[in-house]
Image 1 (cartoon, rainbow, N blue to C red):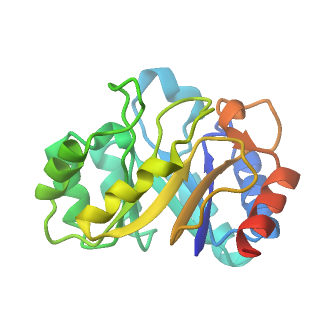
Image 2: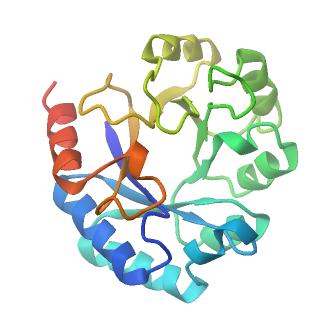
Length: 220
């Protein structure tokens, strides 16, 4: 089981805070710490890190012996990140964008594909939407990540994740709840924060909670 600490943009655009998120993720026992990469998205400008800062952050992760990842939100970010990561992440919001899917798949690295939805009340993409997305990346090594796009997520609907088995892919979970134990899966993604002064505070665990979460997940 691979546990991913989703730091996202909980660093508020501050490299020092991003490094602290690396520290607490590694200390908690996460295998990977993941951020978000974008430039030119107007409403998120204050959360940006520069390319040089991402290089420094990757180096810092290497020094702390925790794997660096980041989710791209632009085509430029896909190309930039490819030299820094061993696998790519596609967020739920890009599930229905063929050109984005194809561009990520062209890098020929494993893909974590979230299956949430911002257009359905359930917060979950339909099997038909997932099938359609996979049709654009038929040769990619895909890990399907059960996801409910609700912020916060009071009802993670883990009972529905087994529907993903029909696709004959590795199954993971991208969790937006604040539960300290969830079903096991090959890949588990969970949000982490330093404190409540961050954008994703309602879906993230603080360092002590995250450490307990990792302990719980490793022990059963």
